[in-house]
Image 1 (cartoon, one colour):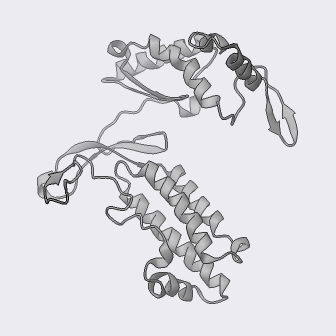
Image 2 (cartoon, helix red, strand yellow):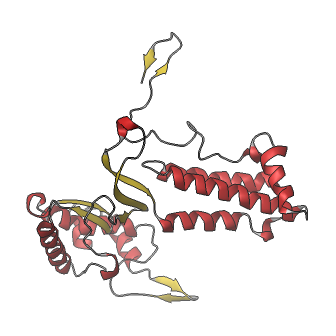
Image 3 (cartoon, helix red, strand yellow):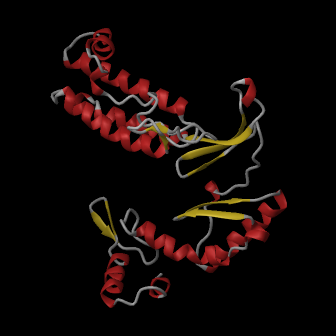
Length: 271
């Protein structure tokens, strides 16, 4: 690891700091556990060090023979034109990782054939799948690679929303709870807004309002119907909650469509 860093960094103070981070260890059940290999799990610099260490794979990869490699830290996808090329790419990946003292995780390593109606794959929180459009007549028959948040990512969002609206927070002001929810939703939606996430956004949108209705009902010791009334009707803007389904708020442009031109003060169209 340090040899890889020293290819570009010669500052001894920086190198000394990196060595200290690698030897820091991790806290496990109140005890410090130091491992002899690897970077500390959860360390703020671990993803960066993984990128540096695995750069050797990028340098040695032959796109013509083994397909296109897309890597982010220790997660990667190889796009191949045939099953034979995919098998060769997997063998090459195992060989390169073995040279670094690593091996691919069996549970997450597999070959997927992208086809309409077939399975897809998860990468960086998105589920990718080949689909055929079912919209207007002019758009029918278009096959494209769609992507939306994985089930794990959606469940994480639901868990976080539940944590922000638990019974132990009933004494907090509703505005504070809404502010916490909006802060999380902005970050989550900003990451997943690209692609075809409308259905998942709609589910999270409805779940947030359900949790707020339950929260208000418990806070006032009233029925859930009362909570729904407060969220949907008593407040002109649904308590100020972000609407993930509203066009122009957070949602990104639709696939295959450019941003709409906006008129300036003189009425001219601009990008």
